[in-house]
Every structure is written in structure tokens, then in C-alpha cells.
Amino acid sequence: METKLLYQPLESIEADAVAAVLFEDGPAPADLTLASFKLASAWLSELNASGEFTGKTGELAVLHQPQGLRAKRFVVVGGGKRDAFDAAALRKAAGVAVRSLKPKGVKRLAWLLGSGAADAVVEGALLGNFEPDRYKTSSDCKFLEAFHVVAPAASAEIERAFERGLVLGESQNFTRELVNEPANRLTPLLLAEAAREMAAECGLECEVLDQDRMKQLGMGSLLGVAQGSAEPPALIVVRYRPAAESTSGAHLGLIGKGVTFDTGGVSIKPAEGMEKMKYDMAGGAAVLGAMRAIAHLKPSIPVTALVPAVENMVGSRAQRPGDIVTSLSGKTVEVLNTDAEGRLILIDAITYAKRLGCTHLVDAATLTGAIVVALGHVNIGAFTNNEALLDRVMAAARAQGEKMWPMPLDDEYKELLKSAFADLANIGGRWGGAISAAWFLREFAEDTPWVHLDIAGTAWLDEPKPHMAKGPSGVCVRTFAELALDW
Ligand code: BES
Ligand code: ZN
Ligand code: ZN
Image (cartoon, rainbow, N blue to C red; front, side, top):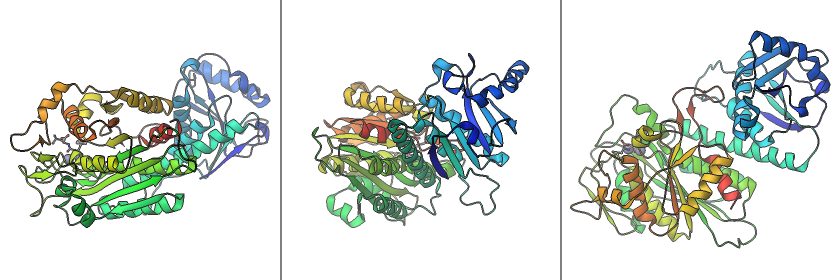
């Protein structure tokens, strides 16, 4: 999709549609008292009187052949209450407009920015234009070809925001494409290949540790998960270094779970819904998408991404319940359930990240069904051993409109992971499952400031939303990029 920022009177814009936000409370905003807006005012009051369009969130009305405009349609999108209209609402409004107009054959859409944020608008449009239809040989999905943001007056700030939105939206869609890939088309090695390609395109360093190297290093926990699959594992490391030496001394490590398919292993999952487990690398894909954005937006601190990539399979070579593995840290783990594999690969990546010099760690993982029980599909579950780092991550998430809720990690929960035969068991029983999983990771983060994000409930939309297609959401990409940029 072509995207452009224009400074041009509304009247002269050539497009299939020009869209603007209208609020529930009050008339057109001051920054939209354009001549042609007034021309449409009879239409608008008619819409309002009939109750067809009142400005509520998600509403949309289309006026064809608007007088005085060159555009073919004038579209109003509901913004809800003016006071509650933030960047997140604007992002959604743009997504709603794109998703309602593209099936109607609109190819070129222009958006009246008013006083809103250009980044949120572009992101919303890019995210709304995404469809997970790559493998349909005759898809009936229609797409926008051009999206133009029309700003009231030239400004460097708007231009920067626009560019940022472009990078963030495209990076999030890059992640969504990866997550949507089925496991036969995205094995651990192919995920590593995708990371390499992205890194080469964006000027990042990429190193992939293969099975032999991981054996040498002693990553027994990660390799135990991988051994059941004919597909070899990979530990993907992507590095961004700022041009100038960072003064803060901070080195951010982003770690993402990269299970390209999770059958559960010998502790096998039920057949129903198992196909969704191709998304079990969503954390890894989010970290790679964030690195793509970081490469373009160039924060001032170094960032290293680590994606342990494996396939969790059943077979004669697969690890068994009761197996005891030695992690890179030296700690031993009793594998009581082979379906709790995410934590087993993450701990070796966490230990390795510390060895690479990361001073702050943030991981994203589709780690537990229990977080979905706790928080549903709305909030990411956030765990930490360091409140200051959690505050930073939550602030970044808030700035990017990604919802996140802090979860407890009291010492009492740690007891759940006791094993009779090894240092730790890999499961903590039925209750508080997302918390014991987080505690397991924490045992390996040790004193390094660390935040764990359980995205099992938020990385995949089971149903389409008005502003986003069904399937991978690309959650965490924008938050991670913001975190690095705002350091
Ligand atoms: N990838 C799953 C997490 C998951 C489960 C996401 C269900 C979405 C829906 C993870 O590897 C897993 O299987 N976790 C187990 C842990 C349990 C065995 C302690 C779970 O949550 O059931
Ligand atoms: Zn599992
Ligand atoms: Zn899993």
C-alpha cells in the first residue's frame, strides 16, 4: 500500500473516499471547520436526526458525490466521546474505516488528520489492510492501494510521527505474517532464515546458534524440547547497536518464545483446536518485528533479540515426563509435563542473554492457558522481579495502546515448583498456572531486572474485530519498539 502525507486543501484531494472522525458530543471539531465540511452539514444533521450516525465508536456513514469535493465519497467515522478519544481510539477508527471501505471497492483513501496523531492513523490503516489470506489461491479479499494522510499544515513533528507510524505498522504486519505461517512452512530453521533476511534488509547483525553449538554450550533444557522433532532447533540472535555509545549503560534484551508448533509432546494436547498452536512462536515473531522497527527508528541503547526456536513434537526421540535436564545455568529441571515446553526453552535463552551482557530483560511468550483464564483476550499478563522496569514496560504499552495487567509473584508461589529429584519442576500444579510459569523463568533471570509478558490470550484474535482481521494480532511489537526508543 502506498502511504503519503499531504498538505492540501480537502477540496482538491483526488481519492475514492475522504474520511474524517466525528464525535458523539458536539459539532465538527474546530480543526475540521473546512468549507466542504460545512457543505456536508445538511447531510450530517440528517444522519444524526435519523439516528443512522451519532458519532459513536465504530459507526461509519458514506456520502457519495459530495458537493465541492473531487473525492468520490465523503466518509465520517464515529470517534465516540471527544474526551475519551486518544491515540488508541484514533488507531482503531482508521482501522474501522479501512476495513469497512475496502470491501466496497475503495482503493484510494484519504484521511483528514485534524489534531490527531499521524502515527496512530497510519498504523491503524496498515493494520486494518492486513488479511491472513496468503494461501488462498483465489481470495476475495480486497485491499486499499493508497492511504493518504491530509494534515492541516506542514510540520516536522507530524512528518516524524507519520514515518514512525509507517515503520511500526509495517513491522507489526511483518510479525503477523510470520505468526500466520503454518508449521509446515515455518520450521525453526525457516524462522531463523526469516530473521536473517530481515536483519540483512535492515542493517542488523544476526547470528544463529545451531544444535551443535547449543550442545557445546550446554543448553540441555532447550535441546530436551527440540529432541522430539526431526526439525533441528535454532537460537536466533539479532543485534542492534546505536551509532553512538549509549551513556546509560543499559543493554536491553528482548526474548521471544519461538515454538513453531506445540503438540504438547508426550503430554499431548487434545486434537480440538490444536491447529492454533502454530501461533506458539508469536513472542519470537513479536521480538523480530520489534527489531525491524528498532533498526529503522534507531533508539540510543543497544538491543539484542533472542528467539529460541524449536518444534515440540511426539515421537520415539521425544523427551518423557520425568526426564531431568541440565540447563545452561547449571540448574537441573525435572520435566513433569512436556507441554510446559516454552519455559524450558526460554530459560536457556535468558541465561544466554545475560552472558551476552544484557542488563535488562523483557520476554514475550504464549506461555500458559492459565493467563487466558485469568485475563481473557484483553490484557497481556505482566510479571517482574523489578518494579522500575515493569513501570517502563507498562508506560510503553500505554503509549502504544496495548493493554497489560500486572500479575503477582509472591514468594509463596515459588514453592509450587519444588521437585523431589531436581532443582526445579517445570510445572507448578493446576492453580495459579501463569504465576508458577513466570516464577520458573524468574529463577533464571535471578538478579537481572526482568519482565515477563504472557501473551497467550492476546497474540491471536479468534474472531475478527472491526479494525483487525481474525488471526495474529502482532501484539508487543509497538510496545517493545517504544520501550527501546523511550529509554
Ligand atoms: N503454548 C502453550 C500455552 C497455551 C495453551 C496457549 C493454551 C494458548 C492456549 C504452552 O506451551 C502450554 O501448553 N502450557 C501448558 C502448561 C501446563 C502443562 C502447565 C498450559 O497452559 O496448559
Ligand atoms: Zn505446551
Ligand atoms: Zn507452548
